[in-house]
Length: 261
Length: 279
Ligand SMILES: Nc1ncnc2c1ncn2[C@@H]1O[C@H](COP(=O)(O)OP(=O)(O)O)[C@@H](O)[C@H]1O
Ligand SMILES: [Mg+2]
Image 1 (cartoon, rainbow over the protein chains, first blue to last red):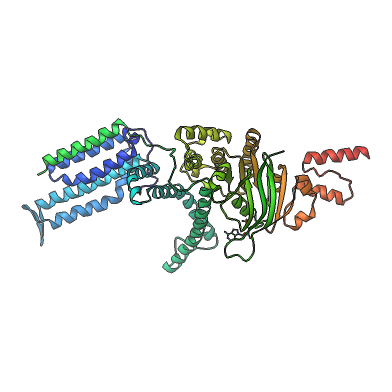
Image 2 (cartoon, chains in turn purple, red):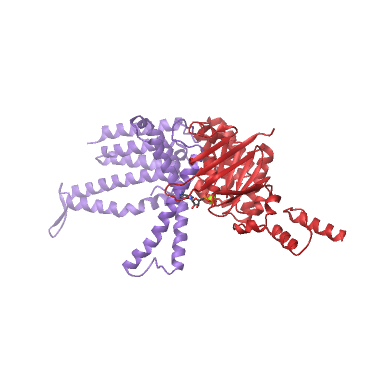
């Protein structure tokens, strides 16, 4: 989900420190739950749309991002419509009754869910995976004191990111090689299909282990010996705009707190 | 007296759970600024030697010295700073998510301050002629370009010795020329010591000295001319002689009194026409 969705750009949101973006999403997810009436939901929606607008990401990409979860949103809506029994009855179809409270609850909960997805989509569309990795390493840095291998985890993440296209290529090559030997990946009975998948996975795994070993040797040869005493080529810089946007979230939280019922 | 860059004495090595030693009683010396080619059939122990020199494997017995410093647990990291290695597979040594990140990787490991890193990355990338690819991801580079990035990663560390372990064997002819060209330039400019492991004898002809490996042992050592005059002996250990050398040997067998063992086509042509004139 996070990978390969970055839309290059130079907007305010793109230029934000990825740490600020992560924090923003984190706090946002926390305060979404404060909204519980029309006014608060309206404010929250307006704020989210403002961020989307600032990111200058084409709306089409945003739609693509939320498409997979639209069904879940719809399902959540229907579930609440039928399960909530509050307020006056609007419709009566046989044994089923739709209440006013149900409609309201359905809209609120599915809107909450939608906003959630929108803000995370915004993050992934405007931030490269490696920026996210750097941000995580920096934000979780203090955990090193509790012997949590933050640097190693971040390095693992960045190496995985670097090897995803390589492994995709390799998968394709092996599939072609096996297809040339008569393996059918797309048809045939289930048993045959499973066998086909195995014929793909086994070489893929063997190659990956060999890669991993060679990579480890190459890293050691280049002087890698853990995070201790390492300097960094890529740096994150916290700018004014980062503080401003986080303050905006704080104000949003205060507003929601005051206006909720 | 010339300075000795690498000295190996009576080196033995055995991989765990293997019946035989992969390296048996190997000794050689490499002078500073020399280009040495190590050749040998597949499995003759070339890569094992390279890894032993880098301290990536621990010898069973024997001595390795780099610029008079004995290689052991204590000196390993300081010695590694003086040596760089480029491996065979371009993909499996590319660590960074972009070209610049990869070149900086070794510098980061050695704690080089950031301002200095930026300078060194820039100069290293220029030396391999890849300036415009600084922000490129490895996925969008050819094999030869990736190997040049690997070389840039090595020279950014400003080592005295560079080891190429079949660094060109997975490349097409053009990629090969690019990589060899980059190394030749470096050698001239920085007086670097080059240890080039290859089974491409054409490439080995360029070296100052050749070491021939056979089944974990050094079979012979000498200038390319001396080595190529071994003729059949090389073919016996499954080495494919360069075209010019093959022709020269055939002509000799056909009775032509060829003297020199020059491996270049030009040398052969010169010798042939002088022979013809002297007739
Ligand atoms: N990791 C290993 N474990 C066990 N045996 C190995 C390993 N790597 C290489 N060998 C064996 O050691 C010998 C020398 O290998 P290597 O140095 O890779 O040869 P070369 O690089 O000349 O092709 C070969 O017989 C090979 O099978
Ligand atoms: Mg090898």
